[in-house]
Image (cartoon, rainbow, N blue to C red; front, side, top):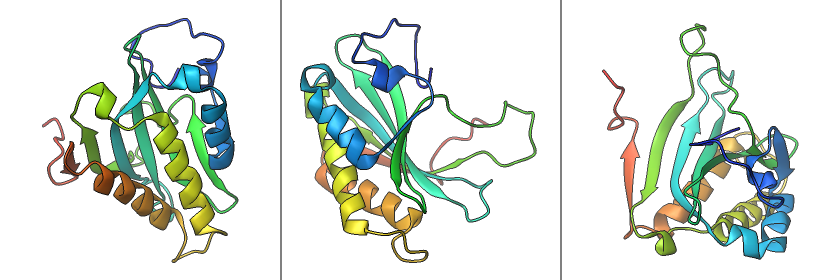
Length: 180
């Protein structure tokens, strides 16, 4: 399961966030989250990462969210991206090469927004769903070099950066530790 910090038996509604290989349009993600207010009101976003896929021919960019269930402590991760066909939210196993088994470059975090306030002051999944849906609507049809994956990632990231500028910290690729 993607983002599972510990094994957990998901409840019937939590399956959306914990199930394998689930992909929905940003509009469907929005509808699902808002149709299940009682369940998803306990999730808060702890970090938002703007990522560049160096293995992609066009260096595709997307967003990676980490959310925390404030009741169970369970972490869940999902990504949002703009593709030629549609904007999507993907929840499921992280698709990368096995550690050390590939010569392809791994995805590069460009900047990370960490929400440092108490859980009640962090972004909700409702806010994430609303920003993703409205960005998709504003973007209209995919337009390379104009309304593309770079635009989508930048607009969504900037919306959260501006809204939470007093209660978040940002790390950039230059300041992210490489572990060496």
